[in-house]
Amino acid sequence: MAIVLEKVVETFYKNLEEGKITGKKCTKCGAVEFPPVYACNSCGCWDMEWVEISGKAKMHSIVMPAPLSSKPEYKALGKFAYGEIELEEGSRLNGVVRGINKKKRQEILAKGQLPVDVKAAIYQRDGYKTVVFDLVEE
Amino acid sequence: MNQTKVNKYLRSVSIIGVGCTPFMYTVDKEETNGLTDGEMFGYAALKAMEDAGVNPQDVDFYFHGEASPLNGSNYLTPNIQIANWFGMKGKASIHHSEACCTGYYAIEEAVNAVASGKYNCVLSGCVEFGDGVAVPGHPYKREKMTMERFLTTTAWLYDRAYTRSLMAGQELIYDDAAEWYKRTRGITDQEMDDTLNWMCINNRRNASKNELAIERTPYEDIAKEKGFDNVMDYMRSPYNPKMGDFLRAGGLELKCDGAAAVIVCATDMVDKYMGNKSHKPIEVLGVGCAAVEASNPHFEVRATEEAIRQVYEVTGVKPEEIDLFYANDFIITSHLIAAEIAGYLPYGEGWKYICEGRTAYDGDKPINTNGGRTSFGHAHAASGLADLYEAVRQMRGEAGEGQVKFTPKTTMLRGYGGAQNICTYIIRTID
Ligand SMILES: [Zn+2]
Image 1 (cartoon, helix red, strand yellow):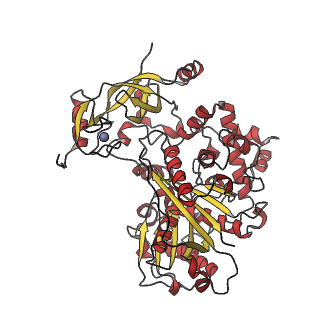
Image 2 (cartoon, rainbow over the protein chains, first blue to last red):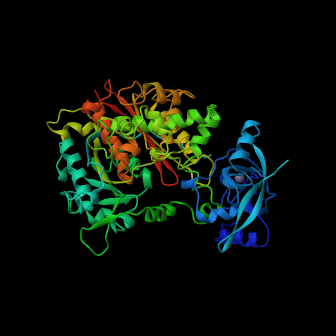
Image 3 (spheres, rainbow over the protein chains, first blue to last red):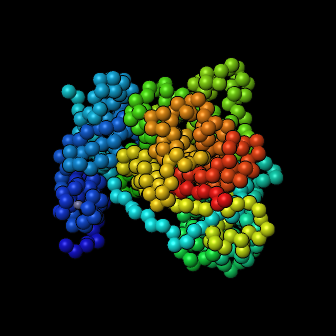
C-alpha cells in the first residue's frame, strides 16, 4: 500500500466530535496504535487501517494529582488520577482516570485490585474533545 | 519496545580535559550579573583545553549544547554566536538540544565524531541560563526567569498532537518512577518518603564538599536552625512540603546558570595532544541511548532499561565493575531507579543503601558525589557535563574534601530529559 500524506491527527479529533474513539490497526500483525500514528511500532508495517476502539481498558498504576502535577483547568475533571492504561486492543498509554481520589486509591491498593477496569470516555476541553477514562465500579 | 544493537567504535576515544563553571544564579550577584553566553561557554571550553594540554588550534570541531537557547539566550543558532570567543574562529560546530539530557548527548556526539575517524580532537560544551534569561535588545543584561515563564517553556517539551491533550504524560514526570518503584518492590509509603528524603540529604552532604555547587548547607544544619533535633523530622515537616504525590520540594532541581565542557581525542593520539600533562586519559567504553515519548507508560524506566542494556552489551562491562554512579536527578527519584536498573545497587535493596547513607560520597556505593540536581544545581544542558567533570576529578583523585574513599576506575553516568531521552555511558581510566 502506498504511503499517504494524511491528516491523521485532525481525523482522530473529528472522529471524537462524532462520538467515535479511533486508532489505527496494523494490517500485518494486528497491533493497534492508540492514539493513531502512521506506522506500527510492533512490526514496522505502515499499512494501517482506521478502527474504532471498544473503550474497555485496564489501569495498572495510580498516581494522584498534586500541586506540581495539576492545572487549574483540570478541576473540571472532578476527582481523578493518572496512570498506565492498557486498552483491550493492547495499546498502552498514560491516561487520566476519573472517579479516583486518595481514599479510593487506598481501597484499591489495600484490596490488591490492580489492575482495575476502566472505560474510555470523550471529554470536552477548551476548543476540542479528548479521551479520558472512567473507573468501572463493581 | 523496539531495541537497538550498538556496534563497537571504529577506534577508541578518551577524555583528556574537562572544565566547569560554578553553578550560579548569575543575576543575584554583582560579580556575575550580566555574564554572557560567550563568557560562560568560553570559560568552560578554555578550562577544558588547559586541562587537556591542548591549544584551541589543536581542536578540530566543537559541539554546543543548550536546552532552551531562544528562551535563555535569545538565540536560534547559539553555537555560532559564541564562535569568536575561544580561539577557534572558522572551525565548524553544531548546536544540539535534548533538554536536560543535552549534556550527556554531548559525549555521544563528540565520541562518535572522533571514533568515526573524521576528527582527531573535539570539544563538546554546554551552557544554560536556567535562572537569568537574556533581556532582548540589550547586549548583556539578564533578568530572573519567573516560574510562570519556566512552566510555559517546559510545556513545549511535550507532543502537541496527543500528549498535551491527553493530560497525563507531562504530569507523570514527577511521580511515575516513585509509584513504579514502590509497587514493584513492595515498600510502604513511609519507606518511599524516607528514601526520597535521604537522597536529598545525601546529595546535600556531597554538595557541601563541592565548591562549584549552588546549595552547600547540609540539611542537618538547616533542620537545627529551624528548631529540629532530628533531620528527618525536618524533612517530613511543612518546611519540605509535598509538591507531588510522592515528591517533596527538596527533591526538585535547583534551576540555575552554568557551563561545562570536555575535550576528547583518539586514544592512540593522547601523547600528541596531552604534551606534558601527567593525568591519565579516561576512555569512553561505550554509550547507550533510548527515547520513550512521555505518553508511554513508565517512560523513564523503559528508556533507562534499554539504554543500560545497550551499554553493557557493547562494552562487556558487568554491573559489579561500576565503582561510581551518576544519574541526572532533577526529579530525585531518578537517582534510585537508575542505580537499581543499572545493577549498581541490588534489585529491591537500593532504597536501603540510600537510607543508610551508603550512597553519599563517603559511602561504599557513592552516587552523584557533586550533589546532583537538587544541590549542585541544574543548568539544564550543562548538568550532564558537570557530572562528567566531577566524575573525572574523582577518577583522578582530585576531588579534595569530597573525594570518595577509594579511587574509582570505572564510572557510569545516566542522562535523562526532554520528554524523554536517555543517554548512558561507561568510562574507565587507562592505566
Ligand atoms: Zn504491525
